[in-house]
Image (cartoon, rainbow, N blue to C red):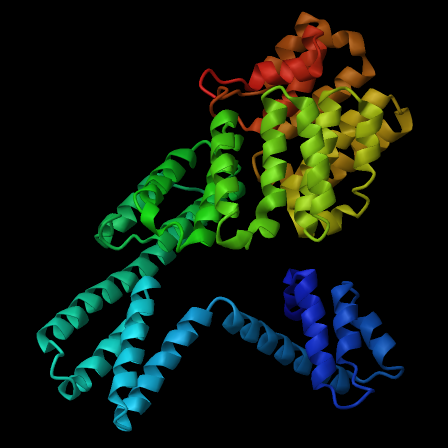
Length: 498
């Protein structure tokens, strides 16, 4: 049951609506319980409660059969959706190829050659080397029917395509090996060294096998690696290296618009996390241009992400008012993108917190009113830790003694083991120092406290240190040196070459 629930949770609201509609159309009896089961699973209700709601008496056999049918319907629906979207062009090319074969057999030669030539052109444009192989075999098979056909040219095309097909298979193997290495808990080499060594092993270069889509896929792997290891600094050279390959293929950006948009966003986000806010904005400007292409078909999908990142860049470039407006706009436009909306809401809390508008920050935080278990499932454990730290600092500033005690105890109980296991003891030290400050505000400006802070943290420099870690530390520093929180934050994160 966990697998079907997981699949349902991965669906968008639109996909859920379409799936329920498809069930309505398939159902021949009014007492079919598949839609009811789907809606209950979508609410994350336990098996025991679902059985009780669907069947008054215990009926494990009927329940198992119902879930099996729903699972089959769901997989069939997802497969159909995939054919409708991702493989539409591929299916069109295959239809042209099959039609040409039938037409050749029926001696309808003019239309047959026209169909197979069109199939070849589309397959080349879409880099579908496996289908091209079949197209060239068919063209050679019926070459005798057209005196103008140059058999030698066709044979050469088949041979060259075969090499590209083999290179594509090598790239798939290399991609799998790179992903396997980068998914490791501890990396023995830098991501760039890992990627380079594996590509070298298969003789893959920008001009020999590393195509547009594959380059984007490697960027996606690196982006995931940065999230897992919480290290955007080490991944940046790799991202620059990979994006330079995309820049070498500018003539293909229109054809691969979706992948180019995703690559631009990954670069903008990686630069933001490395505190290159101006350069990140430059990528976002290019992204805006790309979103307007092809009748803006991808604009609604990405515009809210773009707006949020523009807001965050603005906040760390010193334009907090504009940042707050942009983040509010994201919350308004991303109603169907829950993850993005939660990110935007927490970012808004952080902005108000840095402006020392603690009451407004706390009001915004109250919109994040699901349980930590829910948020961990949706957003990940690190996001929950970040949310709980902001909440802890807010109740300290609002001086609610009961809430402060409760939040300190809750934080330690919920996160101590996790933070120790992931070597994030600095977070525990930070929370401990925040507690010391709360118990005695005056202590923060003493030399003893400052020395304790210095000894508690092993700083690795503005270039390498994580942006959000520095943002939290700015609060502690502002208490020690008695400066405004926002000004202290900007002073800490500033680079000489933004």
